[in-house]
Image 1 (cartoon, rainbow, N blue to C red):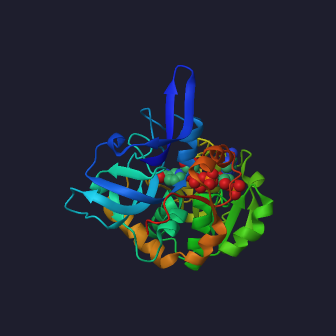
Image 2 (cartoon, protein in one colour; image 1 turned 90 degrees about the vertical axis):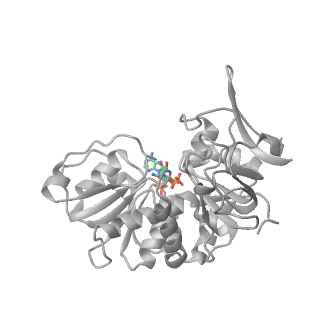
Image 3 (cartoon, helix red, strand yellow; image 1 turned 30 degrees about the vertical axis):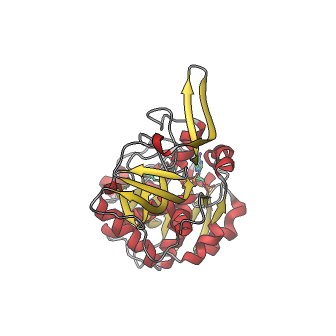
Amino acid sequence: MFDAILIDKDDSGQTVSVTKLDDDRLPEGDVTVRVACSTLNYKDALAITGKSPVVRSFPMVPGIDFSGVVEASSSADWKAGDRVVLNGWGVGERHWGGLAGKARVKGEWLVPLVPAFSMDEAMAIGTAGYTAMLCVMALERNGVTSSAGPVLVTGAAGGVGSVAVALLAKLGHEVHAVTGRAEEADYLKALGASEILPRADFTEPGRPLGKERWAGAVDVVGGQVLANVCAQMRYRGTVAACGLAGGMSLPATVAPFILRGVTLAGVDSVMCPREDRIEAWRRLGEDLDPKLLAGMVQRLSLAEAIPAADRLIAGKVRGRIVVPIDPSVA
Ligand code: NDP
């Protein structure tokens, strides 16, 4: 038996609780993993609160991420004892996820845990951090070098934003951070941001084109904020857009794209091909200072993670939440 968060739904609504499950209830898959750590991402919080239809079938174990050790495998790629990480692929949405003592998944969804990180550090990074790295890689593909000009990170005190600030600063960029929480200025500066900009500067409708300010941007917010960021990019700048914390819409004009050659680069972590995932994790091992993770992380039990979902959706969680599951799995 192992503990898991279980989301269920009937005519009276959604229920979420920590439950004991038997191995027999694990879904189909060729690799069974003993989970060391999981985490609470924005999408997990949407699933647990039911604020968005993230969960596609019930009952569901949420958790789009886990790190752990292979317990049993009939996949040629993995053997018992291998240290692995999973991010996305619909796990925690359509397939039982990582907020549980065990997970059974397809071997092709797993990547090896990079030696630079412990199980706990891998989940301090989690999908949020791996997505931040994908965003940085998208900026690099589009020629955003550290000498091209300052770069901007929105939703900077959240999970994706915190890791993006740390990565870009370590790579030598001048990082400007947008936050709605002025009290997190010192935190963001400790991660490497040189300028803190209030979110309120970005939330009202702006002009189609503003002053040219940034060579690159990582946007986790969407909506009016993303539109205003696009309007203030430098000539041929690139915005890596990965989130919708501020809304799904994009009330922009084409002016930045057709008059300044701005690129809007979409970033998806869920179905991202395996080779890009492996490269993103390799780069995280190289370009993220693990010491910075300590200041970004709070650790919560499975039971504590349930009420934390509301706080995360409300934008009240700083950095990342790690959910240690079994410290004996290392
Ligand atoms: P967090 O909740 O940790 O961070 C989001 C941050 O956005 C908040 O901390 C806050 O930062 C800011 N924010 C919150 N609400 C608003 C608002 N209404 N208007 C403007 N800013 C707001 O979430 P994550 O960092 O984990 O995820 C961020 C986004 O990225 C989510 O939309 C998530 O779904 C998406 N995402 C997408 C992925 C992909 O594959 N494309 C993968 C991972 C995440 P502050 O207080 O500093 O302003």
